[in-house]
Length: 166
Image (cartoon, rainbow, N blue to C red; front, side):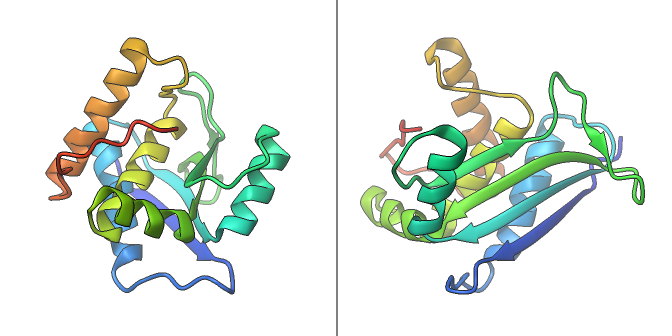
């Protein structure tokens, strides 16, 4: 089983991405695919932005006029993905993370920015693979368990506060 992932990371000009975060994001994306036994090479795009830009995207794509921590734009459906014909990789989709929101939430929940960005990346990767938590219930519990499994394997285990937002 080949679960190699190409992670294309970009950032808006006005955003500073802390040292080590790009490697962390790559590790998180890879860990999710390994944990999910994802078959074949994959490709995902991760963009770091600020609250102003993520609010614009949230309004444009979800009709919600407020900033948020992360947006996921899955390109696959029911396990079917477009293929990058140059590489043969399955194109999973795009993740957009607000550094502003991540910093505020890390402070609010009393953990590191790395833990917060790790969580947001893992959370979004699961969305790109078809998991959802909007309806709550068992689906949400399964998604949270998968998040914590991956984060623990990466050494990013949560503390006693537990983020249950969306």
